[in-house]
Length: 272
Length: 362
Image 1 (cartoon, one colour):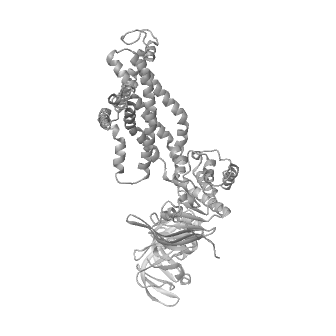
Image 2 (cartoon, helix red, strand yellow):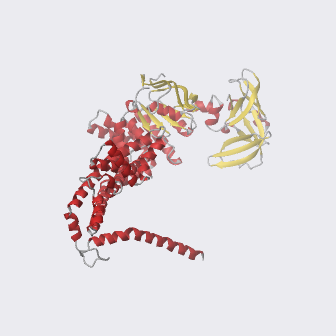
Image 3 (cartoon, rainbow over the protein chains, first blue to last red):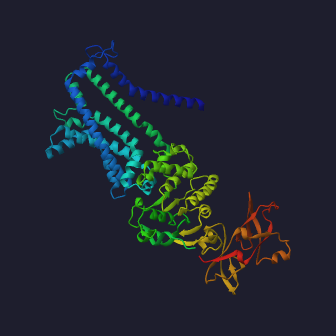
């Protein structure tokens, strides 16, 4: 009897897992396969024959391509600045004890709890009061803010894993504070900081909610352009665009993992 | 023998919030000397080490290395080599890079530096381990790398923080001898900070016992065991039977101690009024059957009778626990020489001389 109950639960858990997986991957498979559909209109799934026509139409669309460039430039610059600010914030939080420390770390993580729409609207009001109308600058600020929770959290996690004695050892051997940071703290925290960068970049590349409020005609990002395109005339170049975006993100993760993954394995050695 | 003083600590105090971690501590360390700071956790020994290394600044007092005041110097401006309790090897560097790290900040060509790294690895018997990563090494090997790294910069003073605490019992003994040999070979002036008396007594030539931020006693390992100054040292170093009581009479040579239900003859060299403790080391007590002859008994100044409560033959030693008529329990350590085992409930006589009792104040 007990055995039967066990079996039942086992199959129930397995079913849940498969269902979750199906919900995650199913739409992705549909979108990817539809992006290769050869039919010239929005036709039922599955595609009857394959072609690259939607990719051609995506790359031929000037609004998409300039949006892609805007998104990439924005993603890289916002991630870089977010990583620097995030790492510095994490360094202060891990190394010093001061009043309001908990408040500060909560503040840095708060953009994750506030809907991006709210942040976008708030920034829109703020920027128009401040007289800042450059779309790219406004988007850049917004993207740094919404990605900070990722970079701060990743840096915090990897910095708190570094024992104080490592830095003290470096200093007792003759390294000053700056040298100890670049020789010891940063190399050990690097994989974690990069992991945070990947999340930040993916989030930035994806963001519509905050960006919708802040772009101007010269700084339309790809997701914003896609939303606009979907409203006007829904065709499968949107599917091609999303597939392409997913491809870029995966490529980035693979490349970064190749670059720093080895280091991460080695770094793990001492923290067994 | 007068030694050049490498380190001098004068009236140093350090307070953390409500705790007085180090309270007016004064001591000095001579060139080439191995000194241990020994005490229970929270006694101020680690704070003292961190003060010397420069990770903490003293509230008051002076710290001098080779006569130079180092109070205002950053850790990297002092020539102090540190062996951390957790070794603190850099996980992203090879063994050779670890050992050579300190040489980056010294005026040294790349060839000189790699020669020095080779020499250091040879010193700790790890030649050929240079290209390995710390996580590929055993605990003992990691510790030797850390020692080589600390010694590579040719420090004026070497500080060892609980050097053996992370290792298992068998390895500890091996490494204790090894560390001692290595330190002797380079003639390093060393301070060992530890709570483990075996570590302190086994490596150091001089022991400073600390308790609650102050120095309880300073002396050679033998001195502090045989002549403890106070109750804390008597109880902390080795095992001891502590009997509370007072002196009831004394002459120039002997005194009579009374308390805890016994009366003992003790030496009269350290007399004082009020409550005292008689400290009797377990290995100083001879155990006889009650049938033992009068001649045998009369050879001892003190004879107590009791019954065996517990007998534990622990390999080389037999640990006995004997209860006296006064309910006071006495621990005894006998050599295990194949004598018949004393059973629980057996009556015994405990015999020891006046010189085997140490009278200490609290």
